[in-house]
Image 1: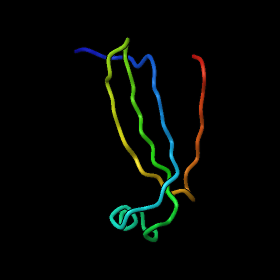
Image 2: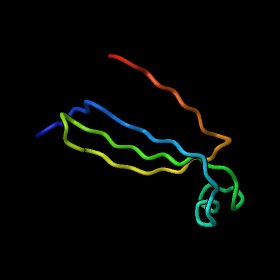
Image 3: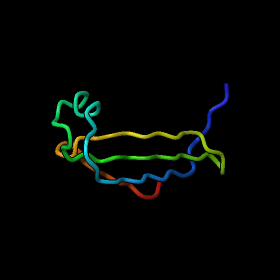
Image 4: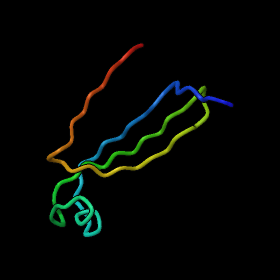
Length: 68
């Protein structure tokens, strides 16, 4: 079995407005404020994860930890 250990990660957060589909899924009004998150994780220079998420603005909490 091969395990890839993440060596770096980049998150980009951007304020935006909920689309009708997102609003339905998040149980908020269309156009309500949301945070869009794009993440790219690498393991020794190789991309191992790419993701896009949409978060309710009123329930988003950010915590960063640096170092090991």
